Amino acid sequence: MFEKVLIANRGEVALRIHRACREMGIRTVAVHSEADANAMHVRLADEAVCIGPAKSADSYLNKPAIITAAHITGADAIHPGFGFLSENADFAEMVEKHGIAFIGPTSAQMRLMGDKITARIAAIDAGLPVTPGSPALDSLEDALSWAEKIGYPVIIKAKDGGGGKGMKIAFNENELSEAYTMARAEAKAAFTSDVVYMEKYLQNPRHIEMQILADKYGNVVHLGERDCSIQRNNQKVIEECPSPALNDAERKKIGEIVRKAIEKIGYTSAGTLEFLYENGQFYFMEMNTRLQVEHPITEAITGIDLVREQIRIASGAALGYTQDDIIFNGHAIECRINAEDPETFAPCPGKIVEWHAPGGLGVRVDSEIYSGYTIPPYYDSMIAKLIIHGKTRNSALMRLRRALEECIIMGVKTTIPLHQEIISQAEYIDGQYNIHWLEKFMENNKK
Ligand code: ADP
Image (cartoon, rainbow, N blue to C red; front, side, top):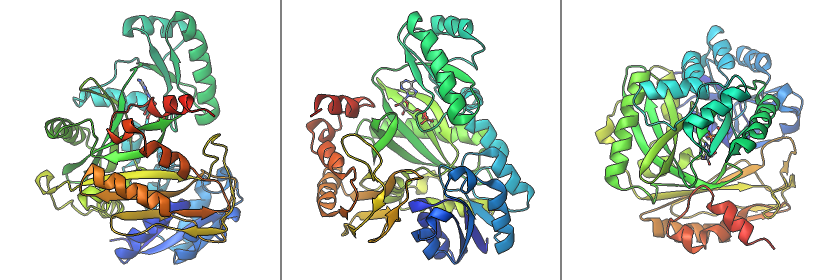
């Protein structure tokens, strides 16, 4: 087992990883930017190294600085968390070459599954149901001819896409030219590569993703699904599991398909396969080769610590259990609490004057904030995740309502009022929502 893990991240996920390491008797190294000198992940870790100025490009994305920090502190493994370098195959390869373990898949697996175009091909070969789509598009003419084949509406997506960026929808030929040009420009700005491809645009799907764990000896389990359909700008806002849209037979069926596909692909570590789900059909979209923000809801209903499993797998341990050992227990919901204006979504960094976290049975709060902490303006605006577990969906909902009421964050605006509004709507309570529900709801309730 590793003796010391460097956590190449900040915020709540850095704390999350630190906690798993501590429970496994592993020492931790925090890295931080100049703006994060007072951050909680720096305070909790056994050691901390400043890796550069506030801007992410100069610190949390600074590969040589991070690897140097690992060498100086004698860390034998690096956990990338999510965001930043977590899906950067070049970084994983650099870490491997320096004789440090990368807590995640191999760089080759990341290259295959992290690129949306090659992942689609691997998924088709492995028997996954995939959204009808194209390979990389060479030109507008190529795009027009693929759209003809696939049938409108279509969505243009970036090969390296993430965070909902670089996606444009076209309902007809006239719209396609602009969608193609804009998607490429957005992709170029956000991901450097302007390679795009096309998929059939599904009009009313749910976003349902499957969590898997795979060790280095070919053992694969799935840990069920997460329904992440409550979205704004293609970004998840509330997630829950199990999905209110699936029955046990459907869950078992897609679970088995996914498990076999991962066995065939030969992937190792934790991973998530994202699907759209419409009219009883699953359509594979992409794989995330890392820990997901919403992983705690799966932990709540399976009792499995996903970060611990990632660390064990990376160190060469076998899973030690099979699919039959996985038992799903109850219902879990996560709200992403952002320091944002709940109406305009403008980021709202600043000093937290007072913070009272909700507690009690079935309530988990993953957050880096503390009373007196100043949220820096340079990074993601998510400041806390509220994860609720209940015996049934209804008990989880009642508990979530109670916990949101109890949560006090003074000094900055947060999205808590938005969460309260969403979970009191009849459609949400009935589980009757798809990926457009939240945006339509907000449009109808504009003040
Ligand atoms: P990213 O990696 O940028 O998050 P994804 O491929 O995961 O992009 O897609 C994010 C979201 O965009 C999905 O959850 C869904 O809401 C929407 N989306 C993506 N592809 C399609 C599609 N083919 N049809 C309809 N909506 C889509």
